[in-house]
Length: 384
Image (cartoon, one colour):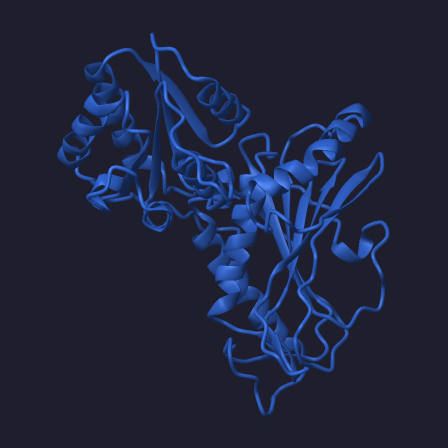
């Protein structure tokens, strides 16, 4: 990664989603939009989506996706449950915001009795110690003061990324070096590796605990369907979760890329890998889709909430590269011909020589992924 440039930016007006059950928090929900507008941002509430008392699921989840900040107010009520998931709208919004790597700001109302379901949700949220701001309030005026101060802080720093030179060499374990990896596969995979800097290695006891909880962490990100079977393989040195692969209906079916696995190493390195878009003529390195795919992989790692420390290094690679072409992927159309097939058997790899803050795994994922995708494609072109 680049060694001389520092990237930073000031975030302008932000869309702030106000997530909560209305009952028991009517005064707070009615007061927050004016406050958010007054400090220069755009409030988003389910009341704005529909005139109904209950929120539209699709509209609320779309509101999460289109917002910059997820503002959760925890009051006494859990709210009604959707019959298919058993979760309330607020619970689903929290899960979606976590999976998307959104900035999450949480305020819990004091002096009220939480119902059992809300108490359980509060405990679940409390398990997230990375990338989440927690606070409490007793009255609406106190909440407004705290939210205003937090939004001003986020408006100044939430999108800032500063790169620092990595003065020592960094050993990355690439996927072909993992235990149990089948050699000689012909399917090109893009891999992303996140290495915490200056963090201690996990002990064997902690590795066992993390291995036991890893599948649950993956499911909480919603990166796979709830009913999907996940395969866990673990040892004292690593834990790997393999995702199910969707089978094509026909040999020439065009299929988008998808995350295929995750590995946590005793060293602290977290790795994830994914298939690339493919059709009947092979895998496709799409300059438009690749940045988005890498950004999703970075957000996935961030949503696991396993990264500790203030600095990380990020490596990326593609292997193998034979039968891979640079082209445009069309979801419902398989190509008739492919140009520029690679004849090299050397992997394409980016070894980091800079560190960056863990914001690269959420709000900074798009910026980081654009650079990584560009270098990967340029390196691939030079090796054909």
